[in-house]
Length: 355
Image (tube, rainbow, N blue to C red; front, side, top):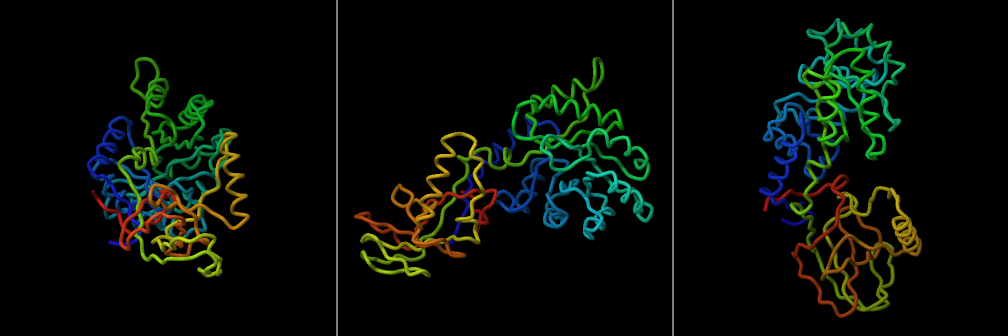
């Protein structure tokens, strides 16, 4: 098969999935967006294989892509909004759990509940230092008036990745939520060991631990990079000489060599990197250097040929990329599959191949 492929050492990958699941209390696999490179249906199938009781998707539109492959509950993580017709319709689906992040939206759902056969299943999100979605602690006083109309499935806390003050924040918000109404805690980005301590601490001396579920995405699906490899097929190879022109923009070839046409382009996420976090000084210097090269029309491709990454001739096309191979290096053969570095949270591959 030609194109861009994600090769999976399936036995090793599944051992990793099982290890993470066994070490994570109440694991809720996250399957959203591009499905971490695997696709949503594949992640739903693997979640079913793991025996997970619930799966989390990002958007209402993603529910249909997982429900046939997964038999359990489906949590929609994007907060409900009254102008989303699909989100309103899914309130009637007894397998779907809706996230609510504003008191006015909870009130709107409560008003709609009378038209449903069963109360809609809801988890309420609390605002964290992420400053993204959620009710602040001061807003919790307005929640109680609407709880009778819904089926409260829990409280959700989406923590930042930084571990600075993370546990203290989780404990503070959890206590505020549980004092409003006892329910399961659904938490993201809290290590399993800390979550276990938190559940016991919230349960109190001599009591059962507080019910808690941990959503896991990247660490579950991509946590063993050695089990995964991305490759792209050589589609064509042309000898070129210095001074020749090539590509849409007819750029001049700087040295004799080969023009290698590789499978993969913007449709696969190649050349469409997310902005760098640039936390360290080294990362900032690398970002500056890359920006300077791109300003002169040069960009290093993610394709590795003969052990080294090679330069793009020009920005990637939609489904193919023109890569320069200069000097005395021998040309690859048409049909060869060569390594390509992809960010799997943004990549769309042509096929997932079990090896």
